[in-house]
View 1 (cartoon, helix red, strand yellow):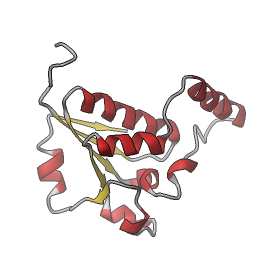
View 2 (tube, rainbow, N blue to C red):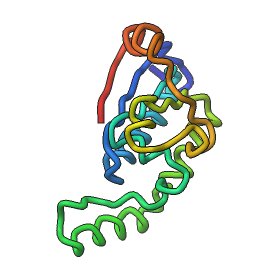
View 3 (cartoon, rainbow, N blue to C red):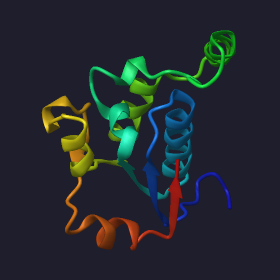
View 4 (spheres, rainbow, N blue to C red):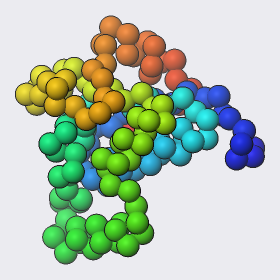
Length: 143
C-alpha cells in the first residue's frame, strides 16, 4: 500500500494509564493510524483519565516505578529525539480528526468534570460507546 492510499479501517484505542510513556505510545499509535487513513477513537479510562485533565496532562511522570536517574534518562532521550509533548500530540490528534473520549465513570471516581478536560475530549456515552465505537472497530488496542 502506498503512503497515499487509505486503509478504511476503524480503530478503537483504550488508554488506561497515566504513565507518560504509555500515554505517549497510545497517542503516537493513534496518530500513525490516523495518518494512514484509519478512523481513530481513543477512550481514556481508569488512570488514563489523568492524561486528558488540563492541569495534569503536562505533569505525567515517566516510569514512576524506576529510579529517578532512569526516568530522567528516558525523558532526556525523548527531548533529544525532539518528540512532541503529550499535550501537543493530543491537540494534533483532535485537529486531525481523532475522536477523544473520557470515561464518565472515571471522571466521577477521580472527582473530575467535563470542564477539566483538554480541548477536543468529550465524555463517552456508556449507552452507545461499546456498540458504536468498540464493537464496530476493525481493531481494538489497549495501553
